[in-house]
Amino acid sequence: MRNFKILVVGFMSLVLSGCASYTSNSLADPWQAVNKPVFAFNDGVDAVFLKPLAKGYEAVTPEPIKDSVTNFFSNLNEIDNAINNLLQGKSQQFATSVGRLAINSTVGIGGLIDVASYIGLKHAPEDLGQTLGKFGSGPGPYIVLPLLGSSSLRDMPGRIVSMYLNPLAWLDDVSFRNIMVGVNTVDSRSNLLAKEDIAGEISKDKYTLYRDAYLEEREFEISDGNIKDSDLTSDLEE
Picture 1 (tube, helix red, strand yellow):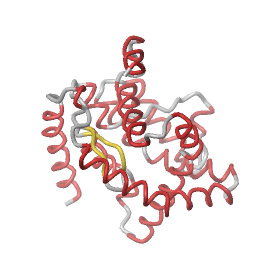
Picture 2: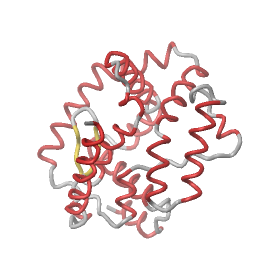
Picture 3: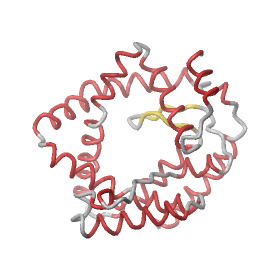
Picture 4: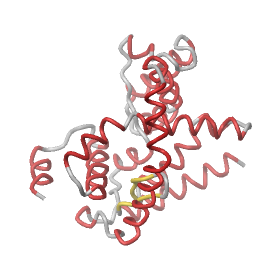
């Protein structure tokens, strides 16, 4: 049944990415009327629940332990990284992702210690949205997902596939799986606290700032950082 679901999601991703490729970047956010209320809801949930948890976690968790938790969940994503590096024809990065998974899962005690980085295997994150972008699929409309935040029509199916590729999804113990997902969420949110303070100093229009930052970051990731200076200048002028 799980394999069948993955095939269905994969098919959906191809269909949706085809739609996305015909959407102009100049119309990146045509669904603001829906996106903004969802963004406000997410922001409210974050302010009342998630952000205080993240601050508490940050305050009581020693840095070495916090780093180990981040390393553990990052290691689980190496399967997704490896598959998408392979699909994009990045053989060296594919080998790096497989090597990182093998080394950190064993010598690194289940991924708690990022031994691979110490020996020069640099993290090479890739996902299905980046893979579709590499094959020419445009981002399509910007979308704010309930609780999950910023996405796009192209990236949304990839987020679903990534969930299935994460070993946490393979756990039969639902209670333990939910606990692990919760810890991952709080740890990830705590890693954004410093960046959020900087963002608040840059702009008071939180919705626009988050939207533009997401779209530009995705463009940067898909192009592997090969963005023309003229593109950056035009973004600043806008």
